[in-house]
Amino acid sequence: MGKKLNTEEINRLFKAILTLETVEECHMFFEDLCTVNELHSLAQRYEVAGMLRHNRTYNEVAEATGASTATISRVNRTLNYGNDGYDMTFGRLKED
Image (cartoon, rainbow, N blue to C red; front, top):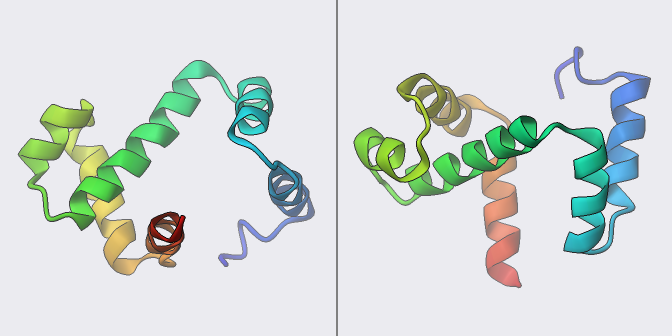
C-alpha cells in the first residue's frame, strides 16, 4: 500500500467498510459517505475495469459506460501496473 494511503484516518474508514455485511448496509453507508456523483464514478470505474478484463476495446467501453478515454486509460494503467485490487475482487465475486 502506498504511504499516502496508509494513514490512521484511511485505515479507520477501511475498517468501517469491513464491518458492512449486506448490499443494503453498503447502500446506507456509502450514500451517507459519498455524493451521488462520487458513487457513480466509483461504479463506472469498476465497470470499466471489468470490461477491459474481458478484452473490450476502449470504444466499446466508452459507449457502454459513458466513461471518458482518460478514465478508461487510467483504469487500464491501474489494471496493468496497480496492486491487483480489481482482479482480487473479480476473482472473489466469481466464487459466489
